[in-house]
Each structure stands twice: as structure tokens, then as C-alpha cells.
Length: 251
Image (cartoon, rainbow, N blue to C red; front, top):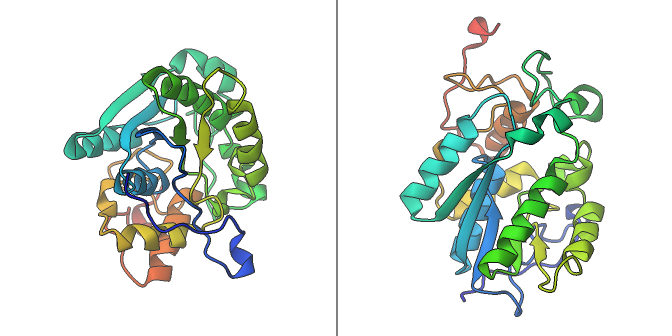
């Protein structure tokens, strides 16, 4: 297996590199990547491929209000020749449906990411549920590492993207089965623009991603996810390849 540059697991505010080590000597050749079709997991997917893993990508349909990301994920994996499953878990929608991401009757909040205006987008226990399924799949195929795209910009809002959560779920995944699985979040301390910079260094085409919380023909440019994405591209001094709704046409 080909390794990639390793970095210490340190918060970015220390001034040290914020992208954590991708591989360990005990990793199997196979790895599971939770792949939504968005920017972060798209970059994680390619990092895992660059590291030499035989990637098995999992996407989940849990009743989110649109399927644009899932369609994008399927197209990318088909182009790359990566094993990919879209797992339909919509049967649990009634258990976790109290979110603007899963309830089309609720308004989607706009504005930048912060706890005050974006709390409505939290899907109850989402990453715990998805990681649990991904861990089971990893064990089933003989993999002992599972990647997901938690990043530093999520910490303020999403508890299941914080370092404490990753540490805790790793402890559980080590004892939940006779076959321990490592949960890897290589961008845990990285900002969105640092993730983008890493992807651009690999020559990735971010037109092959979907970030908007809405599933329109074009990205809305107003939801927190769009605004964070646009800020990342602005920080890199380049234009986002996605097409956005013109401001005068916004509802």
C-alpha cells in the first residue's frame, strides 16, 4: 500500500498541519468510505484511493429532501470504477425526521454556519447510525478501516463531527465485534478551504460534487452549506465550477 504524507493529529489553531494521518501499519487493503457526494467525502474518497486502498464506497438514502448528492456519488464511483452501494434506510425516516434536511415542510435556514441559525439542519444521531452500518459492512468484507468526512468547520454545530465523538466511536468500534475497525476522519481539524486546497493539489474536479441543501437545477448559494463552499473557493482565489441561482431569481 502506498502511503501519503502523514501529519500529526493537532488542531489547526496550533499552526501545525491540520490534515491527519490517513494510514496505519495495521490497515487492511480494503477500506470503506462513507461517500455522500459532497465536497468533503469526495476529497476523502480520492485520498483513500491515492493511499492505495481498495475502496468500497457507501452512500445512504435516509430520507433527505433530495437525491442530488446520491446521484452525483453514483456517477463518480461509476467513472472511477469504485465499488459503490447506495443503502436505502428510509424506513427509519420517522425516527430521525425532525430536521430541515429531512422534512420538506420545514424552511431551510440561510446564512453562514453557526449554532443559532443552522441547528435546524442537525439530523438526530446521523453519523452514529451511518458509521454503525459502515462498520458492519467493513467487517463483512474484511476491511478494518472506515473513512468519513467530518471536518473542523462542523465542530460548532454537529456533535457527531467533533474530535470527542470520533475518539468515542473509535473506542466502541474496537470492541463491538471480534474484528476491530478504525474510524478515520483525515480532515477532522481541517477547514473547508483546507480540504479544497488538498483536493485541488490532487487535481480534483469539484464540478463532480453537490453541496447545496436544496435539490434544484442549480445550487441556491444561500444555504449554510453553499455559503461555506463559496467561501472556500474564494479563499483559494478561484471560481466554484457549480452554477448558482442568480440572486434576483432567489425565492
